[in-house]
Image (cartoon, rainbow over all chains, first blue to last red; front, side, top):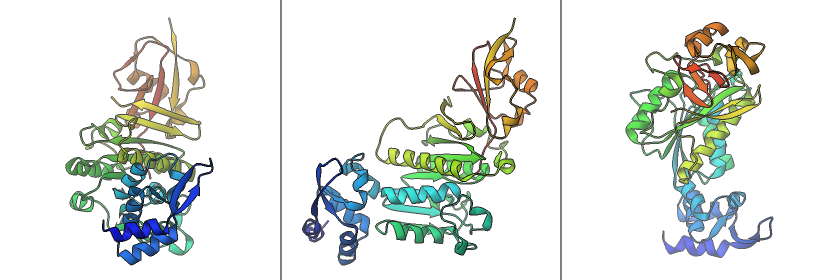
Length: 285
Length: 77
């Protein structure tokens, strides 16, 4: 990074205090945007440089008692693919965007329809028939323009998957059928990307993390050739609080993978049943 | 002699939950396959079977005292 942006970042930084009265050096959202325009760099590149100089982009200030400067910078340097922008994917995209994942690669060939409005955060009345990827770009631009967003208005299949997921550090399975989940898992093995997979039916669901060498979805759905196309969601629907809880759990796994934290849900299944009030972690092996 | 187990059925399997799910009586040595038959749960709907928090299968047997959780295939998002 040239010294120009570093000097400008330091010039625009101010001293602030966290709620617990400890001090830090901060740069505002507005200054990040102006410097990014001036230097011809993305906001997240300015933010990475700031963090490397010990300066906290103010938009992440409430992350910083939990993440180190290096951990926040690791998020900004990362590239996460979100496959499916429905109930899970819309909320995952919002959470990852706010957390500061620097590069989001979003894949969905669908458009919003009326029945999405109960749970899909990116859907609004005036976006019915709008491509879900378009709504995602607009939403991320509104909440965190520092992020570089790449979108693909197409459904993932075994022919296009490896190209769509290129350079993905972590991939998030937010799909809505079991068949496509296996296609995605296969591709993640080929490209060496960890996969965070969740699925929901009614008020119940589960989430797991699969590294390329792990047995993965077959431990959940059995033999891919015999697995049903859809699951219990065809008879139970999908309620908003369940899908959003699972999206939040997926986001936590993504962030922990990027920050190289332990205690991931590898070879484990976190099961949730909000009707019965159950959260439990089961061993898959 | 009978023993008791705890049964938790998830999502659309909930409707098969027996009245005494928290202390359901079994013959010790019963297989999961036979338990499913007793409960009226079709095998293809019981893809994910947990015994005491660990994935298990239709041939696993129960002695009594176990916690059995069964999840149907779930794929929505």
